[in-house]
Length: 109
Image (cartoon, rainbow, N blue to C red; front, side, top):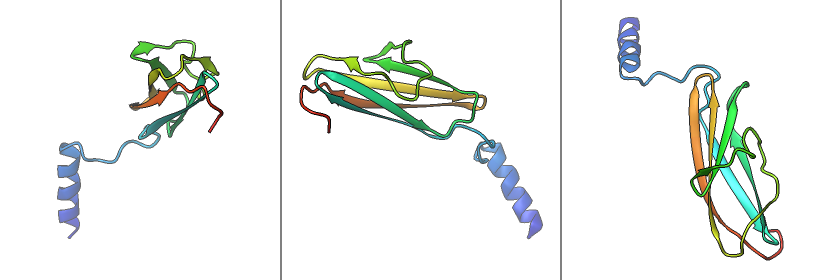
């Protein structure tokens, strides 16, 4: 039985199915809210420090947001669709997430 487990573990490692290293970033999520012609976004992740966070807005880098867990309130035009992206990177790799948010002139949700 022990020999079968060793063979199975060896095969899984050879196929790249081994568990990620301890401390590896395995998830990233981004969500945004908009009101009064402003938007703000937050990122959730499980990266272990030190890590970097890179933001994009409509496909363009947003360096003023980089390394922030929450973006500042940022002006937007009513009804414009925003494509927000984030990539979280630690010493073991990176994970990316995207969301779409429409700029609103109404109150905060």
